[in-house]
Amino acid sequence: MKILTVIWKHYDKDGETCNRCGKTGENVRQMTAELKQELFEKGIDLVYREKKLSKEHIDESNTILLNSVPLERYLPQTSVRHTSCDSCSCLAGVDVSCRAVVHKGTIHEDVPREFLVKAIRQAVRGIVK
Image (cartoon, rainbow, N blue to C red; front, side, top):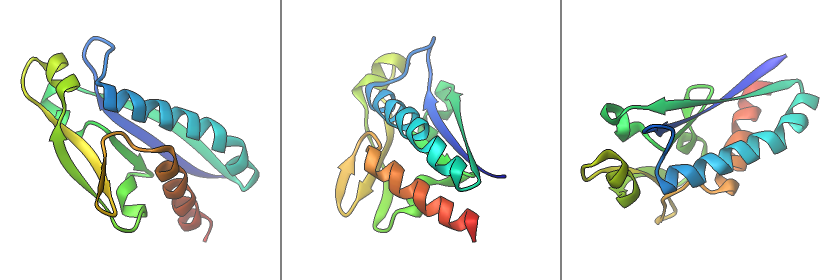
């Protein structure tokens, strides 16, 4: 069986994360749970992991990796930009910017479910070749 590992990296302070990362996390957990059986039937084991980051690595927060490849590489016309994050700033105690996904010119602070589905399906195409 082939494996697709999805890793969600996020800043964590005493078990809490910022609002945008929290929403991304909900989306990642839901989508991996929903797609797990479908992919299993195709011979792919979908493995979900979280990587909690310290304040020193906050610039990596809100990152999703699919077999070590950043999600945005699977989505045409998509890039990453760091934008001010009040929620993280409150948690960290300093002004912080977090990763946001820019798709076709629109900034998404949390990673939308439809981006996750598209990226996971694209990653699967690369695995089953």
